[in-house]
Length: 323
Image (cartoon, rainbow, N blue to C red; front, side, top):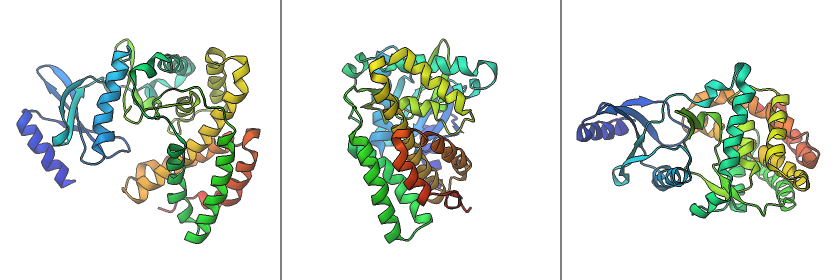
């Protein structure tokens, strides 16, 4: 931390600015807000995985802006010096609007935005990787690597991992995933800002080509927002009615519930990793709600066998995190 502070102090002197640290995300990046000549900016500092955390972030923002969406414009690029500066889209995230009487209305606004982002023209402008089986495996491994060792010996954890993986692979092989769209991969309310007359999109560095259900699960199954099962179902049906043909509905639902469960498992692993490895305690409080939504999704018939396996090896007693 002291090393980072020294870097920021030197950058501040060079740029003649007075940056104020702001709450960051779950990545290795640090964020600082500052004013200069009456305008507001964000300085993003990072020394690890700079290709993903800085270079790709700039690249995807440019694609979004070129396609008519609101994303932070690049002001200054100094990746060799571990930072970039982008415009400040403001403080207010859509999370603050997803409560009260207008909750459903605002969720629907975001879904309308998502459908526009998924327009096939986006992919013509975006040279980004496809969400492959390798991506899926790497994400699911986060759950195996951080949750299972809390409850089982290495030998037992390996056996359980193989059993769960075998079922996940079987389910994945039966999905029809031929239609690819632009996938943000972290499309939730905290990454969407109220910016003038548009919805500002941030944290887009991990974008890929993938199935249209993936970002929908990120939004609907946001574990940091308390919402009801009926609301989640309402939003799913709203999206289907607007963007899925009748002949596609069955496969789309299979994909939606599969990616929802797979993503929620990954999130549990990430939150445990943030706590155990990085000392970030605040994410632990979201794990019970993550399991709650996961159990809800596992009720879908297509996931029957996976539900049985997870209930056997990840029961309520084993889900508790000892702090």
